[in-house]
Length: 270
Image (cartoon, rainbow, N blue to C red; front, top):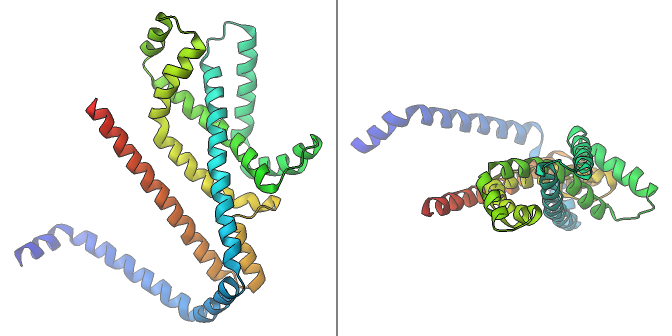
């Protein structure tokens, strides 16, 4: 009994906050259920989603979302690493300065324009002008990868700068070239430093895939939009869509935190 009293005495503010939040949630759920005829809306959603096979499009959308995000992050990591290395190379030669200027323009464009603008320009203008025909999903993978590369380049550059300069000097002292020293000594250490940030970039890519429907690709958002269009009922599909994104992001965030803890343990052991 004393333990219970002590617990309530220490956490009474938390208990009140939780009770208020639960009360507001219950009030909101009650209003949604009766005011918006939730039961009828659910029956409509179930009919189109389960009976008419709408879940198949959602599975396709989830597969495309994962494909675009994972491959986009992979392409972005390669592009971003190359740009970061070019930016930290001493600009003694003219070709190096030209390369750095080109990389600066690249990063400025992709960081200065919305991803939806880049997607529309790439799919409807640039690719047709180049005479290249790609599927919507493939186009999204490339464009999202190039966009991610601009952001990862800055992340990677910060990671490279965080590595002790003595590491590069030691590698050069044993006879390694600058490029070899960067790619085999400095970059691996920088990648370890930025891994948690890369997890956040992956979460951002997952959420940004919600716009791929503009070019006809099917993702999670597009699947639920089509579900609402077919049933003329958007409330249930959009609520489930939001919940699904929250669950996916929460799982990835938990994995990122787990990775951070393991990296911290490995550092302490050293």
